[in-house]
Amino acid sequence: MEEETECRTKYILGLRRTAVVETLVFLIGLTLLNFFFGSGERFIGVNPHPFWIIILLVTVQYGTREGIFAAIASIVFLYAGNIPPMAFNETLFDYRLRLFLQPTLWIVTATVLGEMRLRVEFDRQRYRDAAKKARSEAETIASAYEQLKERKEQVEVRLASQMDTLATAYSSLRSLESLNPAQIFVSLKDFVQQSVKPEKFSLYAFSEGGFESVIHEGWDPKDHYQRRFAIDHPLTKTLLSRKRMVCVINADDEKVLEGEGILAAPILDKETGEIFGMLKIEKMPFSEMHLSNLETCETLCEVIGTTFANARKFKALERTSMYEDYEKGIYSKALYQLLDTLFKRERMDGFSIVLALTREKGLSNDEVQTARKNAFLVARSLSPKEAWVFSESKHDLALRIVVPGLEENATRSLALKIASRIEEVSSMTLDVQVLALGGSEEKDLLKKERPN
Image (cartoon, rainbow, N blue to C red; front, side, top):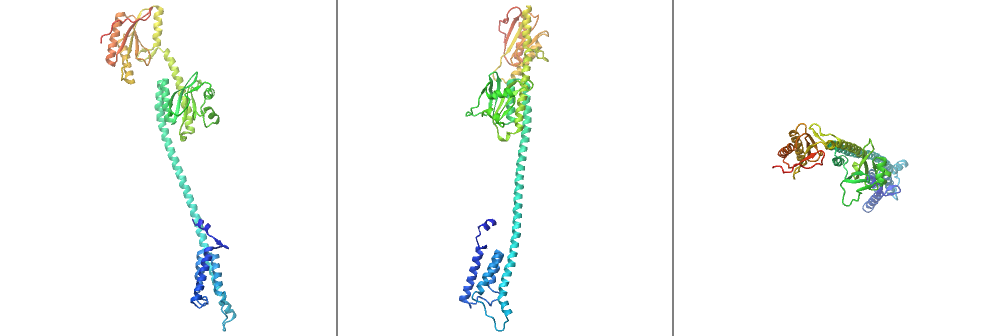
């Protein structure tokens, strides 16, 4: 503020204009006052002289230069046309001393007081600069503290987010134990939402024709992202050939994406290089666009790809496995087909009991699976030890029982007994069939309806 005032001050020959004006106004006014109301000798015999007032005020207020100007102006106003004559009894030395003593005192006083004032001003300026520097340092420290505090809060939020991500990741990875491809995609969707936190993303399944969208989250009706990428699309070619993530951070990858998103990562099995799908993120907060999240996306797709590969291997093994549940003695459909082929080839006679549970409305999946489990337990417990209990499929509500060496009527009685008991424990209705095996085509031998 004081520097701005100093810059606006106007000068006359290096002297402050206000000091010059104040000095001249005071001297002219005092001289006129003495001329009209006094003796007109300009207070030459008065001690102390009134001109001391303006000299002291200007010197203390403005400094040495303005003080000396006030002293010189006072000398001019005092002696201009008003030099006193030499007294009769006065020597030349005394006369000159009387003339020069007052002006000399004025100039010396203006010089000494002015320099003292400048020294005080210099010290004030030094302290002012020190205070300004201290204020600047304090502001810098405060700003650094605020930045440090903000970064600390960001780190705390990130750590909390990572802890939450770990918990969610554990929960999501547990759902992959089912080895069901559909469940794997759902788990991947939840995993991406919790760990990467994108605003818009999509999952694509791969086939011979290219990538086909199966799940998309956060898309608006006005968005025009492609739901299918043909085999000759640049993005498809890049993922199939390079088998790596593409991201807009790379200029070449940005051209490949063609505005379809921020990044795209292939869901692949690292061991074989087989691609099962693609994760594409269209929009995500800038704060989440860091190296850690990019690596998370790539690693996540590799983990899911490995899980897909394991799921396919499991399905292949399941199709040829003898057992669906070894501990409970439940055989698979593959073994039944093998046994049926053997019966036909050897022209052996036998009967097969088929029990199909009807799913009632309003039952949850857990209730249905519990009923299925109870049905198998009843079938295994009521069947002879030499009987074979088969599962049509892990997810079907049907089972098949083959009892070698049992006559037709006994097989029918066993079928009705098992069906009635299953209905009691599961509260579900059953469709029961007794089929003939062997040389002829299978046909239903249970002609009459079962009693309720």
